[in-house]
Length: 259
Image (cartoon, rainbow, N blue to C red):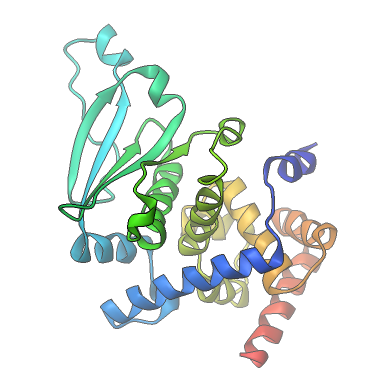
């Protein structure tokens, strides 16, 4: 069943751990919002990218498999998604492309960060990977104690191979990227306005699974729901169930009163 896939695929952190990730994500959102003199609810993917490109010595190297160009030597590689401005393009072996979603290489002597992004996937995945790698720069690579190359795997089946000291950093980058993609203020605003799951997916450009997990985390950690109840609401919301939509709006009202 689809429900079983979601529960098996995603390992949820403890509430204490997630709320630490949540606090860190909000710290970055505040920095971005202040930089552009806007509210957090107005912060979009473009603002976050622009913030990093303006304040960090950073270059994005998009890569894809060289296999297609071996078959069609006259075909020219090109950037698939124009999501950043400081760009380069690189062809790599298919075996690398099939396991690596993104990678950040820091040069602490020059203060430069080279962010490799796999563009052989859909736009939603590319956007998430960019946010994931930027999270590494902001939280992990500014500290020279982590003089490492941080690699984001393409699939959860490869994520078990992360070294023990790296795995928590990857978990944090994933959680932060999810919050950056759709922050609390934006989510609450969309819930208040009665957007359906499909409308929310379209306006945020999130994949179905990414939005599903973002809503699950929001209900479990922000709204203190048990996992089975959160899942019931999310699955109902995905099916345009009035109960689920009204329940989400009730949570929105309660959180607004508490704020």
